[in-house]
Image 1 (tube, rainbow, N blue to C red):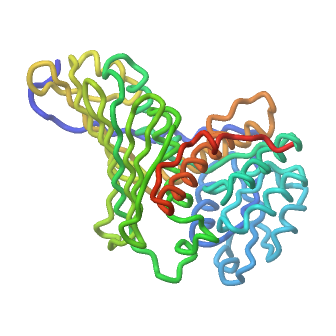
Image 2 (cartoon, one colour):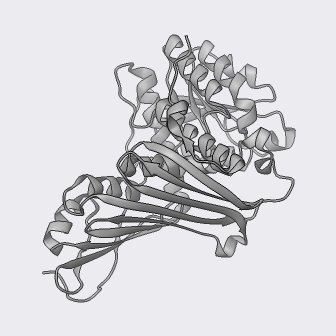
Length: 375
């Protein structure tokens, strides 16, 4: 029976690592900085994904991959030309990805690209067209799509239990970056909204709908804020600031519905808190896949707290899930990917429109940023 008091939280476990592919997927990783090495190690924890080669023009970064059983290349073209590789994971910085994507597709490789997909919509459209013409898959590493917190949010939002979504708010107080980091060079990264904000634009679109217009401001060099109007009538507010010590950084997403609210802590979520005007049994039925323990708080109000796996483990699992999604499409042209290049393009369009709104001080309509196929 539901308790009248708060009670313990529910802990969501990661799914078991079940072999998906036989033979294992053969992956080449381009970009062996800290994140590239993290991805290589994540794949190494599976039975069905095998990194066979890595490439980086930085000798020091490439040297740090030593000790793993794979071929190392200082020239990414040699990796792309390797016939044993099925899929290229592109973990190099955004400004160098365009040519690598096109070369990989021409070589018969599908591409799993880190966000953003591109720095311009023209390049993104050309990449999507090139993948279609080559018959290859083009994917994006949107790890939040594979996280149980956002899967739970989508399930709850699509139910009739919590009513319609009214407003969403993101507060992202992120770790300070060195002043000379390429992240701050918009010609190389696209800026905060393009390089980082696309994650949240994509995840929030799943419950808020398509964006109609956006306006914004930049109160400081390291901060940006945009307000998005969605076709559903939802208002979204997104604030990012990269200026804080790592020990105190925090990300909080808040979703207010007609009959309750959801708070998601962490950009790779560590917890979710739900307060819903509902009988506990009804909310528990919607949240059954996550084995949530629902508690009564006052008349007609149900509360849930879900704790998720350790952040780095969940991050690695999200990368693995995205790569499996891509390889499934690479091997079966009829397979429908859960996260597509079109999704990446949609979130990039909102990020670029948001940056334009910040730069010009005017509200930007999204209609002019819709997909226009390259022929």
